[in-house]
Image 1 (tube, rainbow, N blue to C red):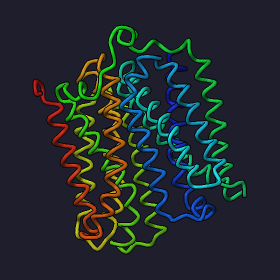
Image 2 (image 1 turned 90 degrees about the horizontal axis):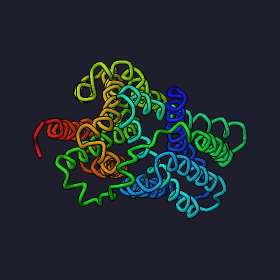
Image 3 (image 1 turned 45 degrees about the vertical axis):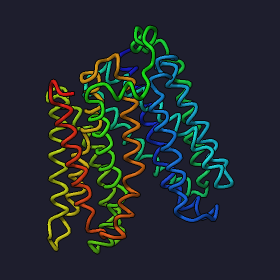
Length: 384
């Protein structure tokens, strides 16, 4: 029963990753078919991000009221319906419309599952949970590519993923008996905390900024890696795309490997190691060498450094703030994470107009420094 339930939980994050990576791989074709400016992709992604941020802030109320075993299949159904909506969209405004339930469902699912694993499983399973998100995120573009090369089209890829989501949601409904009640006493007896009340809890602001900084690093590195390599380092686009993809491979493989040592080292040590590795990777990119191998290696190293940080920070939440507060705080942390992912990469794009692409590693270093400071403040005992 234990193995069956954790397998179902892992699959829920595979399904989340599948949908998250689908839009980016489909956009060049969608943009051509709908005849809209290329930057309109940002409108859809920001709409999804807005939904996930709102869902993260509301996740405590929703999960307390309905319970995690109800919330998870309902959210999967929501994302499935949204994916069907994407597949049937014939105008850009329809994409924006369906982005709303997709963001709400995905954000609530993310917060609920993260809290459930943080309060019921070891750090090993938290690391592997996020590894499986990476598996889904890497698989989504392959599914899209298969449908495009076989003439089925981008809408067919969305329908395929949506059907898979519905089947998985049915599996989740059938697994009700496997789920332990997550914090039943808290759900029944304690009211949900508002945002102001949550932010008054000691060190919550440090945790919020740590997630913001981490996701700023991950999202900015991934989005701008190819552009930096091509336009600043003078590397061919095909080669740059390969090594940019290896950054995400580094995160996924790193989380899989981290799962084998997470229980022995502990979440605190895993975060310390991850931050140190990120700094090494950024320094490699900063190295004023004509040989581009340092830039290539730096991106992979940053990915490996990023790997343990997010799952370990999540897993520390019940330890830092108590199980009775973990759902509310994880929801706020997710909102901070989504905000960092949504706002900081476009901000770097604006900065490049003044500072140039050479500012890329310096920008990453600044957020790595913010992450380090926030983690140090968060991990100090007895601080407020």
